[in-house]
Image (cartoon, rainbow, N blue to C red; front, side, top):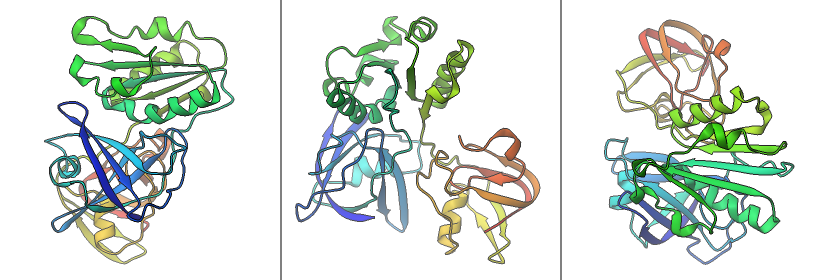
Length: 309
């Protein structure tokens, strides 16, 4: 993590705000590739929050990093902190860019599908594609027109779909008309991602041409106990606390990159399970779910969970 100064804060829509961070002494920041994200630390009273946000600025502009945050009043508090407490002049810890949603530059064409705030990683990707002269097509789907927050930041030629106005995205027609060698990228809600990928698979798209990203917020739930076998400690995970956060608060090492169930870094073996694991990740295969857990987003219901930490 590095301390960066929040230099600009701008509302893009009633719910989405853009934030710009720069080095306090004007130093250049590490460059990144389209689709990268950074981890933002927020000291919210006694609570240290860490949220991942896609970078929306130019990947080759090292003068600053920009993110866009959608306000979620019923969320865990990170987006509310950014909207209500983060103000220009503040210095906040920002992680180095990490890319789990990069472009496959061998593709003949890039088909980008965004749902709502899922447009954010594509803002940097289309800059990269434009610079490379690569063929791409971007579809931006929202429920209401005022949710098209990023439209002013996008070049001409973007296909906007507003369901309230009857211009819904026709997935079957879109996915069945792409040239061989096209790669598909989707960032949206879990439901939309599943629909897009299932439709593509049913039309015969190869699995290695399908790419998706969704950063999941840890779901709240009933408190539960977890025994850490290697550390010889038993912890209680709170209702609004993730298992990863409980491990960190107890000083037990658990690596991470995304904290959203997508990167696989915090994958942990389950030693014993007297109950049911509620898996919320996009990483584990179905056959792994009885012996592994992703502490960043998954929870447990039952008497006691024992993990290899």
